[in-house]
Image (cartoon, rainbow, N blue to C red):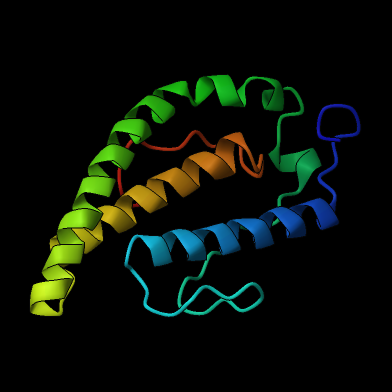
Length: 139
């Protein structure tokens, strides 16, 4: 649709946004960032707001063909960060088990990896922005 008609259908955007929100809630649950079981229809404590793009004015019609290639450097860095985040979650699990608290620095690291990953997903897969994501944890 973006390539040929330069349109981003609202139903497609709403589906992608709902799926992204749900996947992020599940990821936050598995990373021990939240205690409640992820809901399939409520936002709970994880809030994601991705603005609906005006495809004609804000999106280049040809970039969807190459965005996923342009994001390869991010994939490489994120792969390493996912491995580190997995180790951090295991350490945090023990910290929560013995102290009852998720150490703030570990929590911030995992949230930062999630934010970075979300920015790359919005750019390369959801196709709602042409702004190349920065190589950093916070937005």
